[in-house]
Image (cartoon, rainbow, N blue to C red):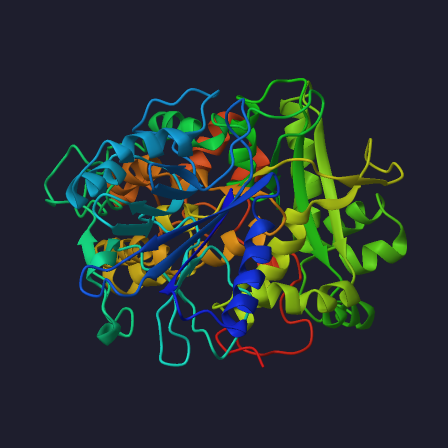
Length: 564
């Protein structure tokens, strides 16, 4: 994980306002890459106005996860410059000892045309955002991966703020600067040498399609695959074995090469649900047995929920759930239980026991991250700044959970019922189960689509899910989690896995005719049972903000409302 900050301005446009913003942006992006930071400036005289010059400022920070030697960004040679925030998992042969950004820079410097650069990125798989300056052509290229798994924000120049800015994370809301998420639809190419004063720096940014031809099979990672529109014969069985094989590679095969024996290098955002449990189990197959795996489980003290517990069963909790909570309560003191006995804590504690039965040789650190109400409220300004330009009530509820979970500061117990011990996760890579609901029909709206329009409506809804992935939450989540110097990986959102699941006939992935907890994400539930995760395979979907109680702490405001 790295931070990127780039600015383009006229040489006489420096002022105190810009310098202040530049410092704030560098501080915010330095937190993403605590191991090293670097700054490089280039000066370009546009061909149309050689009497003046443009200043290109590249800043990057580095979170070292791959390679043996220390790497300082930006990558720079012969006036070519690359700021790289990403991982290359496929499409380029890179050994664990090599730095993928350095290897990519070597490849880019061999290319001449914009089309060649576009084709290079269409042939590699992994989460990324980048800014690349090609000195020979005086062109600036920048983009995010097709799913938007890494953040890159853009500020287009205005009369009041005549600067072009790109940054992994902003410095928060500022009326002088309007940052937006950079679209993932294109790779952008800016001809620096053609910029004139009359342009007010930049009015339009040329964009290239991510592939030259929609039928070009040699560019498998140019864009997400389309959902299979066909209906198979009823006797065809779900492709459980194939799913198991496809999901291995992007899960934990590329774990960080730097770490100390006996310390966790990998953590999972863990609720005990089927998504987080399956990726945890598959990660277990790749991580050496002498290394623990941290299971990060977050719970919030929510005054509304505490009041409901005190006044009775106002939430309509079932008898089975109440008994499960009572069993979990025995492992903690009574006061803690009242505040932090949230649904995700209950299922998390249940599921870690299943993992311990299946994998007794592994040390599973179940990290209880308990967030007092006052602490969550005091962190809101910081979180609001990180998630900007996302700014709805739901954005805050989700960002709160991700911020504290990824921080990894909590407590562990040597055994159920033992006294808690303070613990801070050292893992730099976090696995996130996001994406399975979109690809495998896990939302209630997929069942509704079937009830109103049959399989055809379900297929159309699943295609909409894939189309919406790049514009939803991934950039926001990246900005929040990376503020702790951690990197998130999404096994379900590998383009390899997405392609495999998209191509499957819809009735091999889900069966909306079956009950909730069985027909939704049917293929994944079958795969979980095959792995031995019987309890996890039966759990129903629960949104993170409700499972952790990070939502609706003060009232019943709608999730789509803007923050005040």
